[in-house]
Image (cartoon, rainbow, N blue to C red; front, side, top):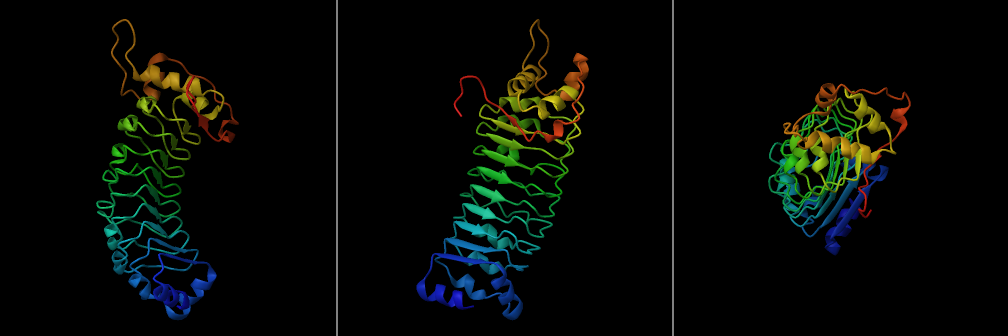
Length: 285
């Protein structure tokens, strides 16, 4: 490809291949493997093309810090991608992926942003080793649970797993002390762990369009004007009660509501409210 020849001649550090022009090149002459010889690259984007596969040779691009592969036709990820130890940004969104190599995240110690949205993933391998990860987005897949080890992501600020088929959330999520935004909307959740109130920096919590059994929670999830009530509700269920009663720290919201015998009617229009903004009194934006 002419652009690859130029990049080689100029020892480029960045390369962007995006759009129908490159789909035509792929159809006419196939992928130009000389891209893998651009070992000084730190930024590579191949997007909005008909690209369906990448070679294991991608492991040669040791200096890559940003790799954008959104909106292609990729059906699998080469395990060699997991050897790119300098990688900070990885976007694999809107492809045709059905699985992710089991050990691909083990050596991506610098990764801060991971986007797997818009694929056909039913599961994601353990992400617990990604201690630098701040943004994990895997919406619009077929996930039935959070990735294993998600509760270990101590640097995580944004978690978006909306539009999946997730049926439960682990109580350990309450340990994500840096989490500010969590989107669990449009899943199959019937309960939510009350431990979420321990995420002290949480400002946005999206729960709408889940089959929540707790009517009060459903109403709070749909009411953008009741963040304080939601936090207090979570805290009350999570902390020990007075008069010597046992803590309900791991009680799910539906269990607690059943115990209290308190239910409320749900407004039919609640699904139109986009999110809950959690703002604690006296806390800066």
